[in-house]
Image 1 (cartoon, rainbow, N blue to C red):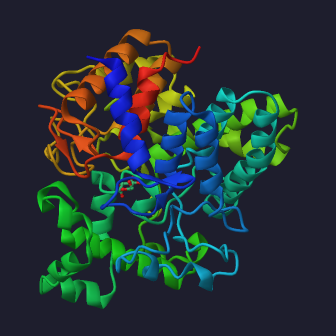
Image 2 (image 1 turned 120 degrees about the vertical axis):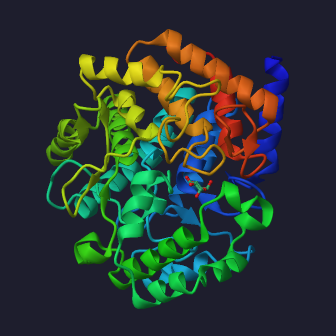
Image 3 (image 1 turned 180 degrees about the vertical axis):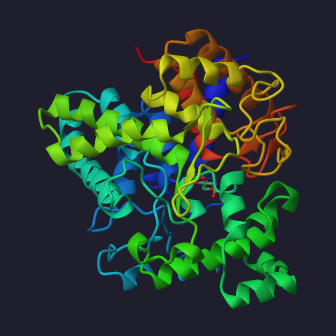
Length: 441
Ligand code: GLC
C-alpha cells in the first residue's frame, strides 16, 4: 500500500466536498452540513491542517440553538431538495438560529471529542482562543442533553428519532420503528404501497441501487415520526410514549461518555472545572452502563425507554463503550472475544454493522451489515483505550487496505470489500487520514 498516494486521494475527496469553511458528506447524496460528519472530518484533518479542522468545528456551532442543542443538519440555502429542510421549519422555534435553517433534532455527541482532538493539534494563542470559544459551547450542548433528554436523571440520554443515533437503520431502531403506532395516513400509505411515491422525493435512490439503502416503508415511517415529534415541539416530555420511538441509545450514550471525558481534559487545561451538577451527571452516565450490559450474551444493548426493556439485537455499537473504558476487565474480555470471532464480527474486512451470524445481516444494505469507517475508527480508538494495541493495529491496517482497494465509499462489504452507497464520502476520507497518522500517545 502506498500510504502517500492514499493520503493524497483522501485529501482530494475532502477538497472536492469542501464548501468554504465546512465539508459536506458527499456531493450529490448529502449536500448539507451534518453534525457528526463534520466532527469526524475535523478529527481527520486535525494533524494535516489544524486551522481548517478548527474552522470545520466553528461551522458546526453556527447551528447551535439558544437552548444549547446542536442540530443534526444545517441546510445549504442554494440546494433545493424537497425531502429535507421544509419538513423541519426550524425558524418557527424561537431558540433556533435566525441566519441558518437547521433540523430540530441532534446527532451523536462527538463534538466534545472533536474539539479536544483539534485543540491538541493547535498551539499557543490559537489553541487558547479556540478552546475559549468552543469549550463553553460544548458545555452548553451537554447541559442541554442532560436537561432535555435525561429529565429524570437516569444517566442515559433518550433519543426521539432514528436519525439522532447516526446508525439510523440498525435493527434495534427499525424494530421499534415498525412497531410504532403511527398516524392513520401512515397505515393507509403502507397498505396501499404508496410509500413508493416517496421514492420520487429521495436523493439517495437516484444515485445508488435501492438494495443498498433503507426501504421506502422505513423512510415513510421516519417522516411520520418527524411529523409526530414536530407536534410535540420536539420535546421529549411532550411526546406520547405509545406513539413514539424513545430509545436510550447505546452508541449515542457511549459517545456521550467519551465526550464527557474530553470535557474533563479541557476543564483541566483551562482550569475551569465543570459544575458539581454536571459532574454528577457525567458520573451517572458511567454508572448507568451496567444497566445496558446483558451478561447472558456478553454484550451491551440499547434500551427502550417506554418499556424499560433492553432491545437485544446485536450491532457494532456494542464495542463503542470501550472508548470511554466503561466495561469492567471481564466485560472487556468478552467484548474482545466477540469482536475477534471470524464467524461473527471479524471477517476479511471487519467490523460489520450487524454480525454475520445474525439473520438480519445484509451485506450491502446501509446500517444492516456493511462495514463503516467511522465505527471502525471508534472501535480502533476503543481498543487502544483498553490497551489492545495489536488488535487496534490490525483493524487499522485492514481498514486502510479496504479504502486503498475500493476508494472512499460511504460503506463497504465486510466480506469482499466492495464499496457501496455514496462514492467520495468525507468521513471515510478524513478518518483514513487519521489512521495514516501515527497513533496519539
Ligand atoms: C446517513 C447516516 C448518518 C450520516 C448522514 C450523512 O443518514 O446514517 O449517520 O450522518 O447519512 O452522511
